[in-house]
Length: 93
Image (cartoon, rainbow, N blue to C red; front, side, top):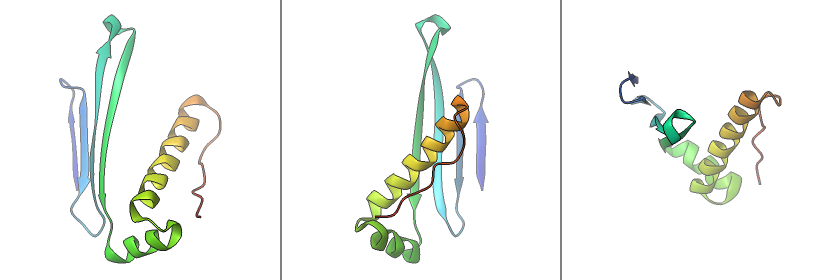
């Protein structure tokens, strides 16, 4: 398991080399003299063969299933941050 924070660069990295291989990073850059910021998130996920098959069965496209899962997770985070409730349920085709 990797988890690293670089406060000076305003960057966080995470990842796993275990059964579920994933990694990502988040970086915050100040804009407009501190009145706004840009947040960049990079995610990478390599599903196990059984997961890839299940994703293919759910949507007909492994990459689309992964993208939908990420979008669902981000919608849940947005809801929580804005105080509009919680988790958004993932929908299968």
